[in-house]
Image 1 (tube, rainbow, N blue to C red):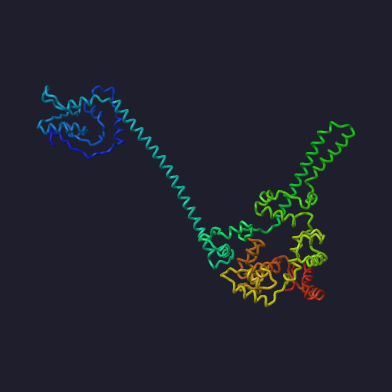
Image 2: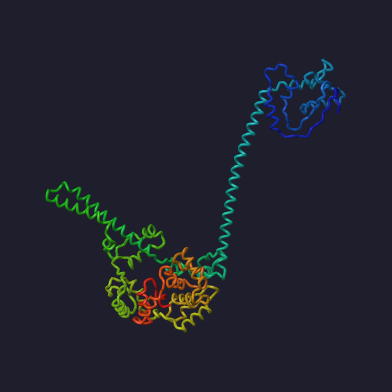
Length: 543
């Protein structure tokens, strides 16, 4: 499309709103002091820099200066120009001295559509246009701020999710290792096999038990004992027994102090309402009560507790003092069976042993409460039955194992063994007169094929001494570093040969003294011989 005066125009591609050009336009502004604003500048300010649909660029090349100026026109202006081109009417556009573009009037009487459009454009308020553009910029800034805030929150959320995923993966890997270890037949701990194959026998892949069937529900309704629902029991440790005794002492002390406070309060309130003789008696009693109050905390447990079967808050002691490690019933049983100060805890005498054996036979080995009462030495029924079963029951007290018993144990272990799991109850049932604990200890510390026997090597002695620096006298842990040796072997080796090696030495004088002691006590009383040698055990003296 050609125009006069070297004018050339071409259509550009559609574009979207440009914020930077808008900011430039606002920063450019309008100089209110300049009264000679060109028509071109005013029109450009009134026109949107980026129209919604498309724009038309018009290149204007002046004759004086070899430069090209580009202005943007509305699509309506382009349509008017195209109408004139179709009607073969020239629309001259000139460049004046200020590089302004004005339409050339051919005839003053002839109306010009382009001029009318420019007149209408001048009517647009610049302030309204500027306010509209500023509002758009504020909206854009608000949107940008909201988007930035959402992006920051999203980054924090993604980071937290990544941390949770890593933690979950670590737990999953740890769980897989534990489950794999419990299912590994080479695992030396039998507890894993009991967990997998023990009762209740029906479990899913995560070792959760199946739902209760009709038979189990019926047994629960009849209050039958279910071995699987019995609570776990824990061995009592010495410090736990001390905590129970201390808790009972605190309760008794608190009771006595409270009684003293009440008595002091009563005497103080009645002191001024009695005659002189009674007042002197009450003052003496008041001083006595105050003295007793000071001495209460110095009393022993035997002086504080008098009732043999007084009850206490066992639940509070179980929760507060023992941290739920023992149930309230277990705490109560331990107190009445062993910890009560009225119970005799001394070693059993020969007379007590003989009388206990006679009373047990007379009562057909039943009713141990009556047996303890008839014994009359302050023993509880628990002490009586325990001591009899462990020391006086001839069917359970055989100390030496015969070769026939050892062979029976070995045969039964090979028959009932499942991997590393050995059902000791079934094995013990085949060995007459032996308990499950006796059979287990015999196998664990004497008959197991992996046990090494014979003299200790120098390397084993060094390993024992090195491990004791970390674990002390915990020979169960030390046995992990000395393969083939049991904790009992390690304990005996340390007590007999390693404990006093740096403190005492054996010389010729010790040899002469040893010969004299052996002649005096004989070769079967090594314990009596060892008492004459300070720092040496029976095994050391014998070897």
